Length: 244
Ligand code: BTN
Image (cartoon, rainbow, N blue to C red):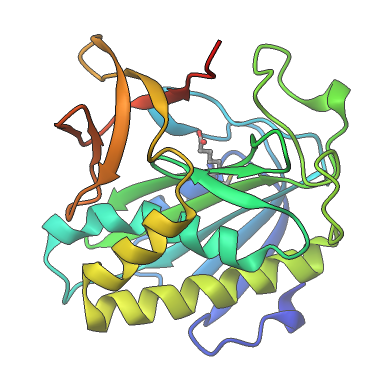
């Protein structure tokens, strides 16, 4: 996989057979340069958003983390990075319908089910962006308690080769990151809104404090927050409510 990564931004791409979590590994490794990538075939303690676990059978997913050091960008803008990673995933996929559920779940296929999740973690002056993409998982291999999940294979995506998918995502990530770093949030916001399937939908949002909000998502604001019935939400778990 390593020799297929051509974008000069990525200075080191390591592939390991097994680890706990690629996010945890990069977050713990002080001093690694920006542009370091760690890929794992299997994770024993894969981390998901909101304290959830991320599991994937050996070889069936693309599991990796990328280390960024946006030191010249004010920290209040770093919240855009997980959304930027979602945009990069949409842009990297070809031959399959792909959208984002706010903030960054990758939805694919006509049923718009989740095929990838993104976890951004701050570690000192670095941000670790972790991406877990379900590539060839069968229906039996998906989490039984998550009927809203799928894999690229189940959604009929034509490209299932992880050696093609990883370079495509890394290329798109580096390009989006470099434009955002130098150009600001507005172009990214426009790209994000175009790819976001949440805007316009009825949603149920579980907020970190335990409150649940029902309403219509109308926008993603200049800080990357989801606007639901006029209220800007910075963090939460969103469900798209299907009309009866
Ligand atoms: C989510 O809950 O939707 C985010 C899942 C992120 C999973 C990826 S897999 C590679 C990287 N390492 C981790 O421990 N988590 C992320």
